[in-house]
Image (tube, rainbow over all chains, first blue to last red; front, side, top):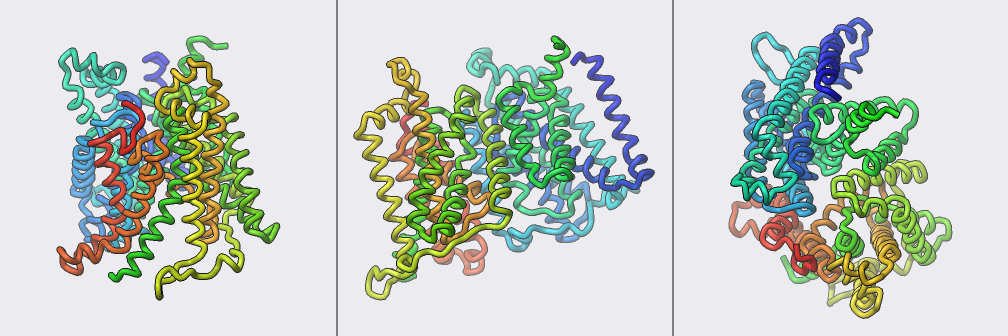
Length: 315
Length: 307
């Protein structure tokens, strides 16, 4: 996809996203608004995973833990009737950043399969911590009765306003990812993925670069978690179950790893399958599973990868 | 905290340990030899349980059910290896995770299509329902003693095969250097299929043994699979011995931690603090152990791979 057509495409999607609430109100389809809001939140989460998994080659099987941390950062203050959204957001970003920093110091010393296992272990630890805190519902989860209060006349209890907040966050995150990955920092990260010893020999402190990357990724996913907690109004440790992390990986790879738009496309496919297939069959997981295996076998680059290849060599 | 209770909890820990070993043995060999991360290994655990439950109800005999269910899971293992797993050995870990995650979805859905969304359980034969007297006044269910014994026997058999037969020698050689074994002219593909299917059968055996206690349910393999991964990382990827000691260690730490940690913490903390923190800490213990081992000794306690 050339930059030009990519730009047109992005503009069209953005315009559609802006007009969607108007259509939803006109056609009285509030369900569609819910689906797209969820899709965009998961796209933010998948995009954050893509930064470490796609661009810097660190396969984490525990990324959903940041979704959980972000969600609890909305839920626990709300439990004490601290509904200030800016406070909650600061807690979400701070807590996920600190968690990423502390676990990253340990995780990033391992490689390959061991990195997969150690990220999984840390996610499991957080999972069990929240399962055992009965004050916040433990296994049963926690209901958020009132969404975050942002001030400035914004009322997130209105689904359309929440939708626009999520849309704004998604656009900001994708724009940020584009800038970041094309910056010098992004070049270093990508080069580390390809050949770390060479980057070390060139004098780059590769560990620090990877750590910063990991912390940014965790914080962006914490933002997604904060939005998700607000959106669903119900949070539970199940949000950080390892299968949730697996779903995030699936989204990134379905769309195309190491591309800015890939996670959004992947989240759209995932949510699309999840929303549309159950109308035809209750066994829709079967087809999702087959799709994942096909992508794993043939889908180098995911859907965006196929598209680019097809444009280069249409047959 | 009296002696009898400790003894019973140790036996419970051993029971969890042998179940984990049956799962981890296949997982560690497949991971060690083929460098294949199989997230769907827990599916065999689930399938073993469901198949055995069905057969036990059909034939009204637990023994016949077990004798048929284990070979059936072996055959399913062969099919999965030939159909899906084989093409993924050369792929990187990311693609393996994606594909085996897809396999989990497929297996869970197929089970739901065949057996319905509810779990399944079946009655044990009368002989296995009793209690056995361990010491004076200390009783333990016969069936749990049977689980421990079967698990230990399989472990012994696997040990003998791996360390005293030609096939076992090839397996060990494959775990430490696959390319060299291939270069020496061994048909490693055949060996892979065999190892994969044997692992599936052992996982199926673990699942069917636990089914009468917990019932067979969809997704039952997904939680215990993660613990099995903890076991093989602690024991050292590719080592059957490591899987055995890792499984026993994890089984005992997890069970004893859940049973006694609040009392132990009560010695140093206030009663209330101990009561609230013990469940979280005991559930985290094995993961903490795994992180410590990965940090200081990434090759695990019995590691066979240099990296």
